[in-house]
Length: 353
Image 1: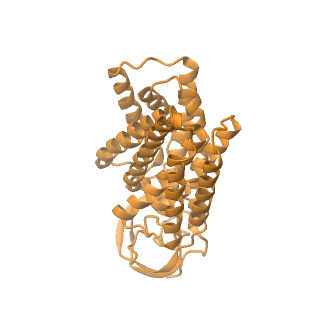
Image 2: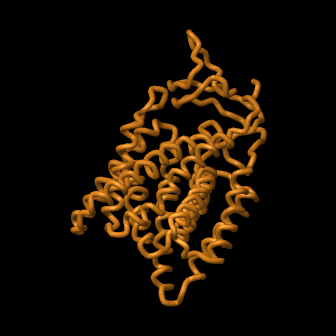
Image 3: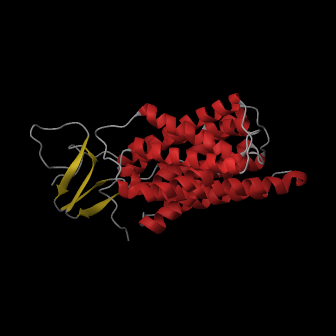
């Protein structure tokens, strides 16, 4: 069998992941400003209510594989980690740090995502990714330990730890979401966001959190629409193509976008420490985004259903009449051996020594 056309699928996944990162990154400093007078669980509820609305407006696609009932327990856990725990930690952390540092600290999400993807899915980590992780960890350590006045140091460090906890929550969410990326992303976003918004709202009511002003509520919901609805949908599409680790790594662009927006909005709290940390993060993202993955590999016989095309060198079954667009149905693959550039999509999740 001939290999697929010799293009680098990592680049397509990288582009989609970068768009997801930009959508998320621009909202972080906005959430800090809009969420300053709003309590954490209320903030989380409003953000994911906006994300739920975004998924309804965008709608699904007939070419996508429906989300099976068996995935509901996974969705509930994803909602608890990614739509309740993580945004609550972020909301609290943003109230006790400056926007530039908080945005950069979100790079820890990439570090945690790569490690979890390696642990649970055996996704390969080469020398480039190892160097990138080391650079990110060093940059994060600089932000947590240095560069602030003694008077606000303790509070800042607690806020920074809260942001790192949010990063761990979203990284765990990313790892759990990886099997969901092969299903209709609109439905995944809708159920995750709806469950997260409802759970956060329930906790907010139990804790007697006050209702925010209408302007703050609408602003946070709008941030959720872009930064948590549109971004998550793009993230799932990228994860489908290049796997959890690489999508999480490329998503490290988001903190830089947030830091730049925060700086443009007048947050000048950072100094040489932030610049040094930012330089390390830039180097790490460059290492991730310039990776090329190619080697000889074997596909075993398999039967499954997912969204696919017939010009990728892997889907050779016939339709009468021929189908040239993306579509989804149950199909069979015969054994196949070849070598080409590839990501970590549903057909390339083989183990690496």
